[in-house]
Image 1 (tube, helix red, strand yellow):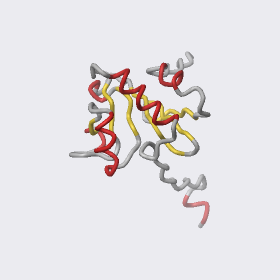
Image 2: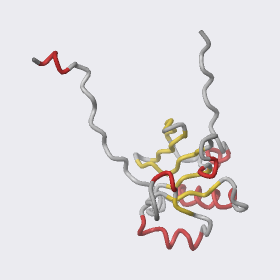
Image 3: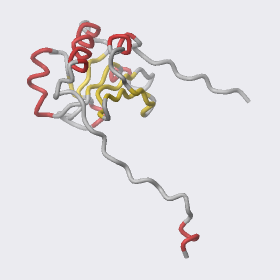
Length: 135
C-alpha cells in the first residue's frame, strides 16, 4: 500500500513573509488555513478544481471591504462561498499584482490589523457512541 505524499503548501513565500508570527497551518478543504492567535487570517488555495479560485483568501468582514480595497484593489469576492459579495475576499493567483498584493496582506497580518482575521465558529463535537448505545 502506497502512502499518500503530503500535499505541498502553495505559495510558500507567504510563510516566509510571516515567519516572525507564530502561525498555525492546518489543512482545510484541500487548501491550507493560516491561524494567528486563534484567528483564521488567510487560506492558501491551489487546486485543479475551479482554478480561478486559486490564490490567497482573506478572512475579513464586509464592513472592511472598502478600506481593504483602497490598498489592495484586486481583492474580490469568492464565488465558491456564495452569490454576490462574500465575507471572505481573495487575491487571485492570476492577478498581475498577485505577489505585491499578498505582500501587503502579510504586512497587515504582521501588524495585527483588525480588518484581517476572524474567530472560527466552534463546531459541536460528534459523539463516538452509537445512538443504540444510549438505549
